[in-house]
Image (tube, rainbow, N blue to C red; front, top):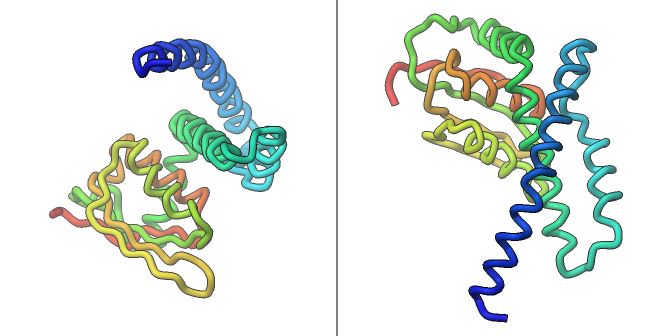
Length: 189
């Protein structure tokens, strides 16, 4: 097969995936509607891990890790979409974090400093960095340090807590990381 023939095959596969992805996102929308009504958690890591393991059985060993990563990323994208639909949850997470920090969303600012912890295993921190990218929120600074087998992270994010992408990102990190907190708001980058 020539490179051009391979690219044509890839295009064909991508075109076949598109309607399935759209259906998957429609299901994610329905999940968000149910979670909004019931107050259920969007992120249930044990369930996601079980699903990934079950769906990856039978995949050839040389691509199994990639397939598992693909499924994990797909689930993260779906969660991002769900959090975006759960505006009350976003508002609650941001409000509680601001109150805990003694800050106000009305304070003039263009950057938000946050702290959280996550697992040290491969991929944990990169998931949160990818969340920022998916929400189109720039990371101005980041410091991560291993402590007691966990990653302790401080990030300075570009944006305002009232911006749609920032609210969605803060909600997702607030719900999926441990020890999430807003450390400060600044009016300079």
